[in-house]
Length: 260
Image (cartoon, rainbow, N blue to C red; front, side, top):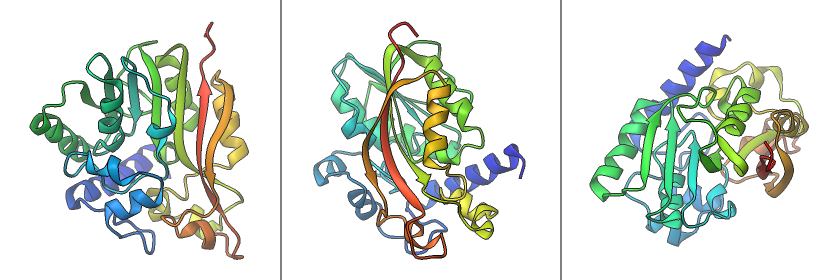
């Protein structure tokens, strides 16, 4: 399927989730409450209680913000920010002197996120409409790039990592949670647009994923957390057709060299 059709299908799928306010998707068994799903992938009750209403739709596969080592005053960029869960958590950490930018290509998600900015009076967060392959962010202005289960949805992942590298300051870091493949998926799954929107068919093999990051110029790549069979992703154990794990939830860190 051409890239523009993939993006349109992803945008439509996530627009429906934004409008419904649930984590329901095409994955069997994934229609639990957003809070239950988010707790299963690493968010604490305290973090979830601190969020504005509707910011958590249970659509992540990790908690990159908790592992990003954010500091007061940091400028943070969230790739595929959705309803804003990680942006609002990051905003609490970076404080008034920091700034958080969320970029998402789905207007309905931005509507939810921006409404919470307005009603909650959160001054250090903004949300921008855009594609993560073409970030509406200036060069070298970000300290930390984060992303949560979104890069797997991109049909041009190498470009996403090049864009993340571009917007980071020298010495800046990228911390992302994403789904990667441990083995090839059956053709029926690979060719399913429903499986693509469900963050499965578009996932890359783990070695290929890491190589894309290296090719973009990043150094110091290290895995912070991995889960071979995440309970929020039933396909992690049944997509391969042989009962073995097919998908891994991975959180990793990479650094733009000080001279980059």
